[in-house]
Length: 472
Image (cartoon, rainbow, N blue to C red; front, top):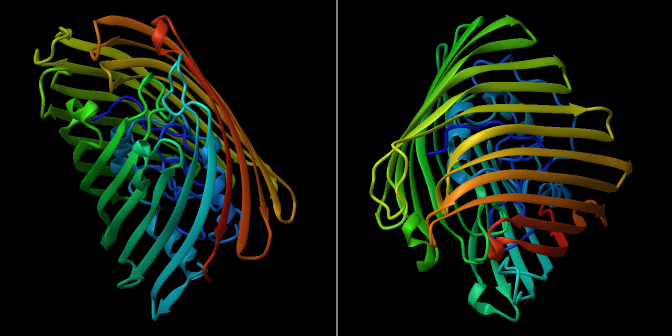
């Protein structure tokens, strides 16, 4: 559904789109360093072979506490799906090597399952992300992470990764609810000669308003987002071709957002040439058909994008990715706000990741995009998100991150108004290993949104405390 930007910053752990202003993470494949969008890091099809990462503590509970500070401004779920369709899961061989050393709760032959329960308490001073009449609350969050892998053969691996929890608002229980974290997926990899085939179902059920820059003045945004699809990569050594398809269904969790219920057909492809082991470059393209169940708010659309990309891996611990091209949407006139026959813009994405030492790593992501909106037909924005992780002691890790987005949209959910906004957040976190299996995490986050539509600015502070236990 979202075509313009598919590059995201890689960090430890993953943030989810959850209840208003939440600091949640879900586990990823143990033994690998996950990226912000939730998949274990691997080059996009057409990139050089996956770089080796410094050994990490497999499935350490503390890694769950990191990405909430680093990816609050992540892209909309549909955009993640396009990236996932293009990139697939991690390279099967890298996954296999990691799974050989993965911690486990249950092991039967090659079958492994890791369970990680946790309990978190957050304080949120503005759960409705409003400028006036803010509501504050304490939120109690029991969670269970499940990582499952079963190699049917050396090259054919079945995986299930998910975290299921419940958000209990102590003072405003109407916001309480079950959630399935962003990044949950059932995935199967297989190889046929030079072809790698990935069949997957990626799903989440969350309620989150503060996690998206374009949403304001409503704490009920969220729902079930499901992507079922297949991707195929044809690796010819010097040339790599890839094609991916996903069918998306979104069902809102609250009647206020029923107008977002939709089905989308998503197609993405790449053709890359390896100029040398460190540099791969080529062309990319994507297309989407987006159909809403209701036609009273947003307009149905057909979109496409085309551009160039380059992946540079100068060393084992450094990645640089650059993308640029053109995006266009063609809208049906089905909503109350007249959409232009075509909306178009150029896109640009730059991502850099480096493990400087065993103790220090950083990531930076920046770019420009045109994406489908949630309270508007489209949003055009600039974004910038740097982060830094460092570990000065054996069992103590610190995390810092900031994010900024400047966007423009024509609101369709109220009296038609053109909005220009600035969205800024900063996060701090510390994780401490109380024992080998028990991890304590403390996080703080400040989010501010400024808008030229008076009622759509807000400030929010969140403090979170979490205990995670590795059942091993």
